Length: 189
Image (cartoon, rainbow, N blue to C red; front, top):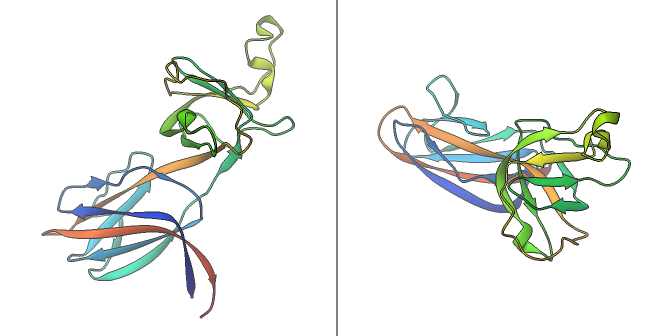
């Protein structure tokens, strides 16, 4: 199989206690993980902890694991102690309450944030609360990100919100290292 790298990779120094990677913004559906030095157990999630019962990668080998990749364009950003994000008209949030997300803006990077929890997805109509967000039918979410100090007015046509995750790894014994890279599988070589 032929692999094409997506984004920048990261690594974790491993031992017998679970260690987490930095947050990774999902841009593919496959993750290549190389374990060096020791047999390594890995887990993928929002705040994962690897255990000896998790997926094992034998020492000095690699595995390609699949994961769900979710993203959406953001058209409106309301600053405050939490951040309100709106998706384009006619679309709804692909994210649910409890998901973790990262925002990447092409021209207004002050608005970017990494690995923040989705607090609310507006998905119902309520005449009593008209104008407070309930009538957005999934087009609006609230993220647990304090954006009150961000200056300027949001107007980035390429702002993209992506699901984010971390990889946790631990060895059976001793220490090692894992290298993590998002990849696209492009076919047979």
